[in-house]
Image (tube, rainbow, N blue to C red; front, side, top):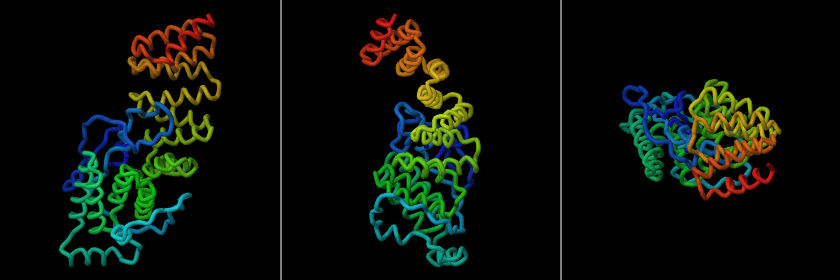
Length: 329
């Protein structure tokens, strides 16, 4: 839950914003596998969850409400708790009257950013219920705080409340249709629930708004791959790899789509690049060996299977592949 920016900055490194100065500060931490880094295919971005993990804690608060209608969900929506439903801004209050109401209660938009920052910290620490409570407070103070809705959606995802998460992503985008982090977050959620066309629309819009976002290209490629549109997927994985050259996942995914199109030599090249970047990953060697077998390069395949077994001696796929490659000569 990409990465909060609900996504990372353009370099793929998560950032937080100081609520007082609104300056970006790099958060240097490991990139663990995240429940919300939803990429749908095996091995894809197994460690590239930066975009789904971080929380966007900018103190900027918008006062405009869009009339964009959120897309319906295919499944029934569970009823939202009253204390959450009442926080959604339906456009009945103008920005000026909202500020006046806040001042009468002795609260300011800065208070909302503080709660948003606390929620982000709780989310980073894995305290998602506490994070949810803080995002609720931020929204109660400033009902048009689109970042808080997007962050609360991430907390809901981590708590397994995917329908409520979708509602919050929708609300964030109602308030700010150009909020890229919510576009990518909703796209990943659509991808997870197998609404692939909706996911593609979200990622495409994110790319229009920020055309050098590796995560958006990677996830759109994953959605294309899921519906069998491998040519479009390959193009997106290539762009993601160019923007994020240190990662192996776009190369692996591109190789998979090349294999699906029976472009085995191109697939072997993609797996080869990935294997050179991560030399201790037996799965990359096994995939390169599979591509080699399809080209009848059995001796080369056998070498890769042996290398995989040196790294992972009990790897059944490598052991079976080696026996197969040897039998084929």
